[in-house]
Image 1 (cartoon, rainbow, N blue to C red):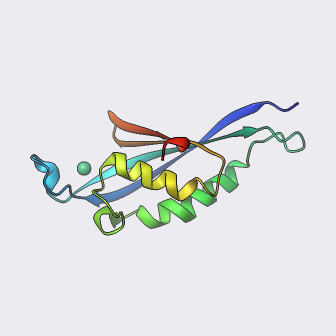
Image 2 (image 1 turned 90 degrees about the horizontal axis):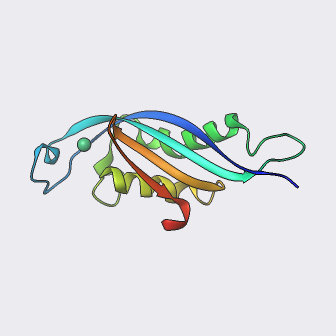
Length: 121
Ligand SMILES: [Zn+2]
């Protein structure tokens, strides 16, 4: 019987956004260096010893997420206000049909992050 394991790959991207209606400075266009943690969960394949090859996980997230968000204006991409919460939900929805997704954790600043579990979006 194989064990169930979570594995995580970490990414970085730079994007701009503005939050219309925000009472503070976030209503103005500004940028962040986002840190994205994508965690998948599944059985360890007894033949490969892996849940999924990190190389394949990296390429899938780069193709479906990073390529679309890096150096972009998030207000033009997301169908909603691009808060870090909504960005994380958008990422989860974009990945959940392609991976045994467990969790997306998105850091907007070194002290501010959100977590979204795949079953919640
Ligand atoms: Zn911001």
